[in-house]
Length: 164
Image (cartoon, rainbow, N blue to C red; front, side, top):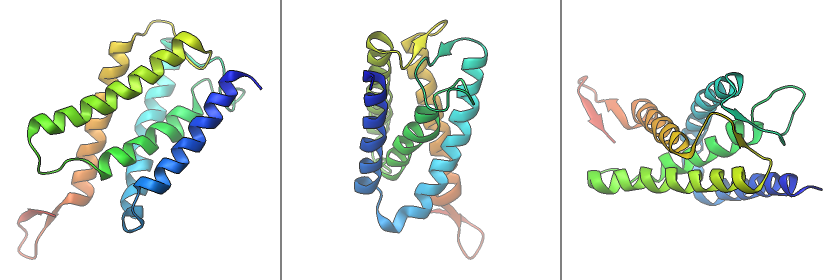
């Protein structure tokens, strides 16, 4: 087995364990909505960047069916987004909320840069790490807005908007 296959299998296992540990049972419905919404965003975006030859994934699951990274776009990134949204520091200062985005985006970008440099999991063709960080930030932001629209902000009995 190649180191890339071992890394991808390990990432799947770690992601599954992360979901089991960090997703409370009472929030499974919320987790599912976040996960599916994030899949929509990352799948479409992932297909676009591969189609325009910005990034390539030499080692990937389902290599005959698709040129994007099924593992990252369809499972790992959406799962991380679930944890991001369910543990978001709601009601905290704007600085703390920004730092929450910053930490998640930076950690994922570091992992991607190391993968790009030392493995064949991903290759930047016409891409760079600041674009990765920026797209992560934007997609986290969009998913957060969707989550708050779908779950957090609800009308009361008189039609006024209240936050849970």
